[in-house]
Figure 1: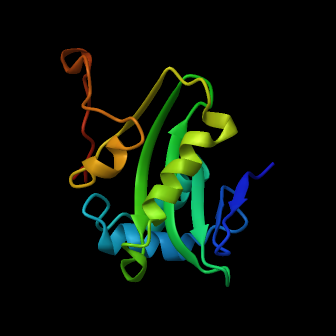
Figure 2: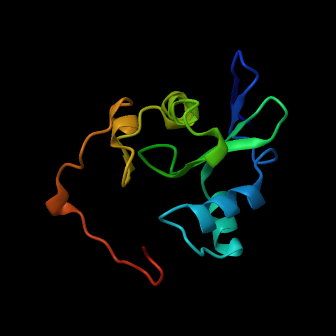
Figure 3: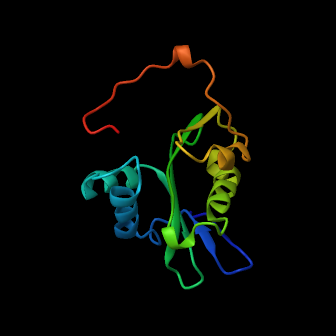
Amino acid sequence: MAHEITHEDGRVVSDDPARFDLRRAHGWISTESYWGQGIPFETFERAVTGSLTIGLYDPGGRMAAMARVVTDRATFGWICDVFVDQSRRGEGLGKRLMAFIKSHPDLQGLRRMHLATRDAHGLYGRFGFSPLTGVDRWMEIRGPGYL
């Protein structure tokens, strides 16, 4: 069942896949983000489908911002693809997305929640995020096209 919150100004934050504007989101991530330049539509579609994907909608229903949480909904979550439309920045939409994620019923009691950012440390710090601990324990494989 979809979880959503309607704010007093008529904006809605929702995880309902039927509302999510996949084409608009792909345009943002593939052409305007620093982390997903050129991601093929099919790859992005699979990522969205396999994640808890959140849209923030203006009163008229147009998507103004988005975020994804890659999660097992039990122990771990990775917040990614947080994006606010260029024309809507400075309106607190990122804060609304983060508040929604932090209160989402499927994300309560996780052992870890991660994210990576180049320039929004202040925003995420307000929601309890801090630098990664135990960095010496983490390993990775970087696939082709990793930015």
